[in-house]
Length: 160
Image (cartoon, one colour):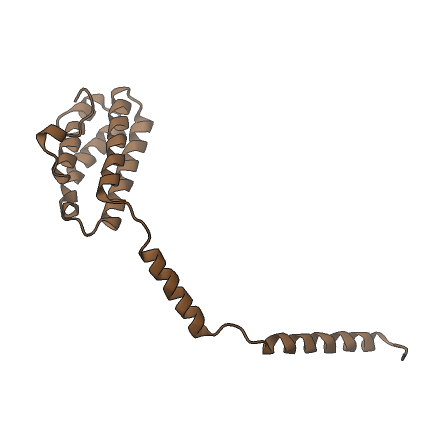
């Protein structure tokens, strides 16, 4: 065995070892770009065919938020009322995103005026404006029109 006499020799030996290790690792074959692209496409197809909620699921969720909104406004819990308004708006955004094939989605803009007047009443913390015909009750009626509810299946909270 040859004695190692200087620090440069040790550094040279380490550098050569690292260079050889790097060259070996670079020459190993990995998956091709085409194979990775094909895998990405297969995963995208699986994602596209995954379950998405329908209009009924969204409307059922909105109905629950309507109830909570009504009771929050009636109790002057404006923080909760504002939260429930945000949940309703989020559900409407989800309907626009996931239910594009439904004809009812074209009627969604009719909900915006009563929703806006209700948001203004909540912002002002005005119980009279909240309960007026231009706010909360009209929002429920607009949702009923969008979902084409019959008079027997109206979605209104108790006391409206």
